[in-house]
Amino acid sequence: MEIRLGSLLAGAREAEGTVVIIDVYRAFTTEAVAFQRGVEKIVLVAEIEEALALRDQGIGDLCVGEVDGKRPEGFDFCNSPYELSEADLAGKTLIHSTRAGTVGVTSATKADLIYGGSLVVARATAQAILKRSPEVVTLVAMGWAGKERTDEDEQCGLYLRNLLHGLQPDREAVRSLVAGCKESQKFGDPEQPHFYAEDRELALEVDTVPFAIRIEREGKFWVSRPEKV
Image (cartoon, rainbow, N blue to C red):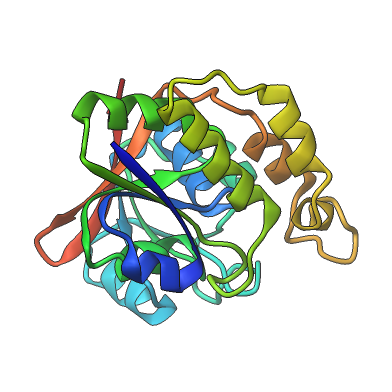
Protein backbone atom coordinates (compact mmCIF):
# COMPACT_ATOMS: atom_id res chain seq x y z
CA MET A 1 0.00 0.00 0.00
CA GLU A 2 1.41 3.36 -1.08
CA ILE A 3 0.71 6.17 1.40
CA ARG A 4 0.91 9.76 0.18
CA LEU A 5 0.74 12.96 2.21
CA GLY A 6 -0.89 16.10 0.85
CA SER A 7 -2.02 19.47 2.14
CA LEU A 8 -4.64 22.14 1.54
CA LEU A 9 -7.05 22.46 -1.38
CA ALA A 10 -4.35 21.70 -3.93
CA GLY A 11 -3.65 18.44 -2.11
CA ALA A 12 -7.35 17.55 -2.09
CA ARG A 13 -7.67 18.18 -5.82
CA GLU A 14 -4.69 15.93 -6.60
CA ALA A 15 -5.50 13.17 -4.08
CA GLU A 16 -5.98 9.68 -5.51
CA GLY A 17 -7.05 6.27 -4.26
CA THR A 18 -8.61 6.12 -0.82
CA VAL A 19 -8.46 9.69 0.44
CA VAL A 20 -8.64 10.97 4.00
CA ILE A 21 -9.61 14.63 4.22
CA ILE A 22 -8.27 15.75 7.60
CA ASP A 23 -9.90 18.56 9.57
CA VAL A 24 -9.24 18.26 13.31
CA TYR A 25 -10.44 21.79 14.19
CA ARG A 26 -13.27 21.20 13.66
CA ALA A 27 -15.23 19.56 10.83
CA PHE A 28 -14.55 15.87 11.35
CA THR A 29 -14.49 16.10 15.12
CA THR A 30 -17.90 17.78 14.82
CA GLU A 31 -19.20 15.00 12.56
CA ALA A 32 -17.91 12.31 14.93
CA VAL A 33 -19.81 13.91 17.81
CA ALA A 34 -22.91 14.28 15.64
CA PHE A 35 -22.97 10.57 14.86
CA GLN A 36 -22.42 9.76 18.54
CA ARG A 37 -25.52 11.87 19.23
CA GLY A 38 -27.60 9.74 16.86
CA VAL A 39 -27.43 11.65 13.57
CA GLU A 40 -28.44 9.41 10.67
CA LYS A 41 -26.36 11.00 7.93
CA ILE A 42 -24.61 14.25 7.02
CA VAL A 43 -24.78 15.96 3.62
CA LEU A 44 -21.57 17.86 2.84
CA VAL A 45 -21.59 20.98 0.70
CA ALA A 46 -19.03 23.65 -0.12
CA GLU A 47 -21.18 26.77 0.03
CA ILE A 48 -23.31 28.36 2.74
CA GLU A 49 -26.10 29.27 0.31
CA GLU A 50 -26.32 25.69 -0.93
CA ALA A 51 -26.70 24.38 2.63
CA LEU A 52 -29.56 26.77 3.37
CA ALA A 53 -31.28 25.94 0.08
CA LEU A 54 -31.07 22.20 0.75
CA ARG A 55 -32.58 22.63 4.22
CA ASP A 56 -35.42 24.64 2.66
CA GLN A 57 -35.97 21.78 0.19
CA GLY A 58 -36.19 19.25 3.03
CA ILE A 59 -32.96 17.45 2.10
CA GLY A 60 -31.77 17.85 5.70
CA ASP A 61 -33.08 19.00 9.05
CA LEU A 62 -30.33 21.26 10.38
CA CYS A 63 -27.50 23.37 8.97
CA VAL A 64 -24.11 23.17 10.69
CA GLY A 65 -21.08 25.17 9.64
CA GLU A 66 -18.79 28.15 9.87
CA VAL A 67 -17.20 31.01 8.03
CA ASP A 68 -14.06 32.38 9.71
CA GLY A 69 -14.92 30.20 12.67
CA LYS A 70 -18.37 31.72 13.19
CA ARG A 71 -21.87 30.33 12.66
CA PRO A 72 -23.27 31.68 9.38
CA GLU A 73 -26.51 33.62 9.48
CA GLY A 74 -29.46 31.26 9.25
CA PHE A 75 -27.54 28.18 10.40
CA ASP A 76 -28.72 26.11 13.34
CA PHE A 77 -25.27 25.37 14.79
CA CYS A 78 -21.70 26.48 14.44
CA ASN A 79 -19.16 23.89 13.28
CA SER A 80 -18.63 23.03 16.93
CA PRO A 81 -18.38 19.58 18.50
CA TYR A 82 -19.22 21.14 21.86
CA GLU A 83 -22.47 22.67 20.58
CA LEU A 84 -23.53 19.38 19.03
CA SER A 85 -22.55 17.40 22.13
CA GLU A 86 -25.44 19.09 23.96
CA ALA A 87 -28.01 18.96 21.14
CA ASP A 88 -30.92 16.60 20.50
CA LEU A 89 -29.92 15.12 17.15
CA ALA A 90 -31.28 11.56 17.16
CA GLY A 91 -32.50 10.55 13.72
CA LYS A 92 -31.64 13.90 12.14
CA THR A 93 -29.93 14.61 8.84
CA LEU A 94 -27.40 17.44 9.00
CA ILE A 95 -26.18 19.67 6.19
CA HIS A 96 -22.55 20.60 6.82
CA SER A 97 -20.57 23.45 5.25
CA THR A 98 -17.12 24.62 6.35
CA ARG A 99 -14.18 26.40 4.74
CA ALA A 100 -11.80 23.43 4.92
CA GLY A 101 -13.20 19.97 5.59
CA THR A 102 -16.32 19.97 3.44
CA VAL A 103 -14.66 22.01 0.69
CA GLY A 104 -11.83 19.46 0.69
CA VAL A 105 -14.30 16.63 0.21
CA THR A 106 -16.05 18.31 -2.70
CA SER A 107 -12.65 19.05 -4.28
CA ALA A 108 -11.35 15.47 -4.09
CA THR A 109 -12.70 14.50 -7.50
CA LYS A 110 -9.99 11.90 -8.21
CA ALA A 111 -10.71 9.85 -5.08
CA ASP A 112 -12.10 6.32 -5.19
CA LEU A 113 -13.38 6.59 -1.62
CA ILE A 114 -13.19 9.34 0.99
CA TYR A 115 -12.95 9.31 4.77
CA GLY A 116 -13.25 12.30 7.07
CA GLY A 117 -10.19 12.42 9.31
CA SER A 118 -9.57 13.79 12.78
CA LEU A 119 -7.70 12.65 15.87
CA VAL A 120 -10.79 11.20 17.54
CA VAL A 121 -11.43 8.79 14.64
CA ALA A 122 -7.79 8.22 13.63
CA ARG A 123 -7.39 4.59 14.73
CA ALA A 124 -10.84 3.60 13.48
CA THR A 125 -10.06 5.23 10.13
CA ALA A 126 -6.77 3.37 9.82
CA GLN A 127 -8.51 0.09 10.65
CA ALA A 128 -11.21 0.73 8.04
CA ILE A 129 -8.59 1.47 5.39
CA LEU A 130 -6.43 -1.53 6.26
CA LYS A 131 -9.49 -3.77 6.00
CA ARG A 132 -10.07 -2.55 2.45
CA SER A 133 -6.34 -2.75 1.59
CA PRO A 134 -6.31 -0.16 -1.23
CA GLU A 135 -3.26 0.26 -3.46
CA VAL A 136 -3.01 4.01 -2.82
CA VAL A 137 -3.99 6.07 0.23
CA THR A 138 -3.71 9.87 0.25
CA LEU A 139 -3.85 11.74 3.55
CA VAL A 140 -4.73 15.42 3.05
CA ALA A 141 -4.26 17.93 5.88
CA MET A 142 -6.69 20.73 5.07
CA GLY A 143 -5.32 23.43 7.41
CA TRP A 144 -6.95 26.83 7.89
CA ALA A 145 -9.58 27.41 5.20
CA GLY A 146 -7.69 25.04 2.91
CA LYS A 147 -5.08 27.76 2.34
CA GLU A 148 -2.63 27.68 5.28
CA ARG A 149 -1.03 24.62 6.83
CA THR A 150 -1.77 24.00 10.49
CA ASP A 151 0.00 21.74 12.95
CA GLU A 152 -3.05 19.83 14.16
CA ASP A 153 -3.99 18.56 10.68
CA GLU A 154 -0.39 17.87 9.65
CA GLN A 155 0.23 15.95 12.90
CA CYS A 156 -2.96 13.97 12.40
CA GLY A 157 -1.74 13.01 8.93
CA LEU A 158 1.56 11.76 10.31
CA TYR A 159 -0.22 9.90 13.09
CA LEU A 160 -2.50 8.19 10.57
CA ARG A 161 0.44 7.25 8.38
CA ASN A 162 2.16 5.58 11.32
CA LEU A 163 -1.00 3.66 12.19
CA LEU A 164 -1.31 2.49 8.58
CA HIS A 165 2.30 1.28 8.78
CA GLY A 166 1.31 -0.87 11.75
CA LEU A 167 3.12 1.27 14.31
CA GLN A 168 1.81 2.33 17.72
CA PRO A 169 2.59 6.04 18.06
CA ASP A 170 2.29 7.72 21.44
CA ARG A 171 -1.18 9.27 21.71
CA GLU A 172 -0.22 11.54 24.57
CA ALA A 173 2.78 12.85 22.67
CA VAL A 174 0.55 13.71 19.71
CA ARG A 175 -2.02 15.30 22.00
CA SER A 176 0.65 17.41 23.68
CA LEU A 177 2.11 18.56 20.36
CA VAL A 178 -1.28 19.63 19.05
CA ALA A 179 -2.35 21.27 22.32
CA GLY A 180 0.69 23.53 22.10
CA CYS A 181 0.21 24.57 18.48
CA LYS A 182 -0.89 27.99 17.27
CA GLU A 183 -4.40 26.96 16.23
CA SER A 184 -5.08 25.45 19.66
CA GLN A 185 -4.58 28.82 21.34
CA LYS A 186 -7.75 30.21 19.75
CA PHE A 187 -9.93 27.93 21.82
CA GLY A 188 -10.88 29.52 25.11
CA ASP A 189 -9.67 32.96 24.02
CA PRO A 190 -12.24 35.43 25.46
CA GLU A 191 -11.77 37.67 22.42
CA GLN A 192 -12.89 34.79 20.17
CA PRO A 193 -15.86 33.32 22.06
CA HIS A 194 -16.98 31.24 19.05
CA PHE A 195 -13.91 29.04 19.60
CA TYR A 196 -14.99 27.12 22.68
CA ALA A 197 -12.31 25.66 24.95
CA GLU A 198 -14.47 22.53 25.00
CA ASP A 199 -14.04 22.17 21.22
CA ARG A 200 -10.29 21.81 21.70
CA GLU A 201 -10.67 19.25 24.47
CA LEU A 202 -13.09 17.16 22.45
CA ALA A 203 -10.84 17.31 19.38
CA LEU A 204 -7.86 16.07 21.41
CA GLU A 205 -9.56 12.90 22.64
CA VAL A 206 -7.33 10.78 20.41
CA ASP A 207 -8.74 7.45 19.17
CA THR A 208 -11.85 7.56 21.37
CA VAL A 209 -14.47 7.13 18.62
CA PRO A 210 -15.06 3.51 17.49
CA PHE A 211 -16.07 4.27 13.92
CA ALA A 212 -14.66 5.88 10.80
CA ILE A 213 -16.48 8.60 8.85
CA ARG A 214 -17.03 7.24 5.34
CA ILE A 215 -18.03 9.75 2.68
CA GLU A 216 -19.55 8.63 -0.60
CA ARG A 217 -21.51 10.10 -3.45
CA GLU A 218 -25.24 9.40 -3.08
CA GLY A 219 -27.03 10.75 -6.11
CA LYS A 220 -26.19 14.45 -6.34
CA PHE A 221 -24.73 14.74 -2.86
CA TRP A 222 -21.64 13.85 -0.83
CA VAL A 223 -22.89 12.04 2.29
CA SER A 224 -21.11 11.04 5.50
CA ARG A 225 -22.09 7.95 7.45
CA PRO A 226 -20.37 6.15 10.32
CA GLU A 227 -18.49 2.97 9.42
CA LYS A 228 -17.98 0.73 12.44
CA VAL A 229 -14.76 -1.26 12.63
